[in-house]
Image (cartoon, rainbow, N blue to C red; front, top):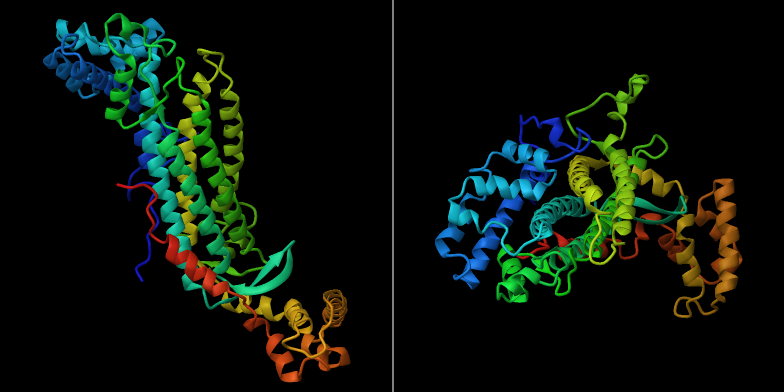
Length: 482
């Protein structure tokens, strides 16, 4: 089986400008290309070009085709210097006015008269934001699919390695080492379905004027409702029928929630992996040839390949996402038809959120890729239980009329097996030996059967079946249709 390769954060040898990274540290090349001030300029210009094109398509009498084409072709940083936009913004104190003025300066006079026609500022910034969100969601979906597939490949690779599941930090029931990872893969798949919903339903642009009621369009004899529909269709984004100056910011909260929910799955996976490296557990080993120093004060940590920095960073990302989620929900409070409560924080949070999340997801994929199970330790953690983790199986036999002619009630069996398992544990005696000394047990179940059902290595339930089902359902499954 070909192994899925982790997506790199940056191409080999590429050194990102720290100014383009969240906090100067976190990001991926793809997210750098999606976000940032210059890309925002580019998307706003694209929106202006498309709006001229759409209006011309529906009303050649308002914008002749050749003039719409001129706007469409020149509305790009290929033709406009970003520093000129910054200069104009410094003069005017308004970003969209600066973009529009810079565009007008490079157009013929006739074409320049149509820039921003029938529009308010949010008819540019909101569709531009929608374009960025659409690309960012698509990119992070691809990164999550990459992580999911690497996890799923581990589930199959480890399907025959014994493992002890725990509940409440206690040894619970035997399984196989791949089984916990099937759980995390399925939860990531659930998160992908949620992201797919936001991709299809929560990315909203607009072209509705200052309060969403198409006042300027109406004065020009234009059906603003139809204009908005056609415009957003051309851009590949959604819209509200009854938008105010902005679509409801609940839609943006949907997106932040989806990423936050996924970050909690990643948080759980990261903690599970990190705990498996601890000296009291040691079920995981790291085969990554690129090692890092363990600690500035404790050089012996080099023996463990350093601290679990990536996993701890993923927990930090989940914590931060919960903060961004709180902000996104607070932003939903918007006085009709608009306030600027959300304007500043959204500019910061969306960019940093996607950069940080994509960074952490890809780093965790690398960890899982090089993760291996310490087979001896994993086996030992099953055997050390002396078989008492099969107690539920023995109890089931004692109450099953098909397996014994004198079945116990469940409460009787539960109390008896609880006492015998406790005795086995405290006195460090194999569970089977304790059972064979008890007449209530041996009168109902013969020795051969007892030895078979108390072997923890053969008490796996449907662990392997579950691994295969999850792998077959989700490995290489694409979330978005091309």
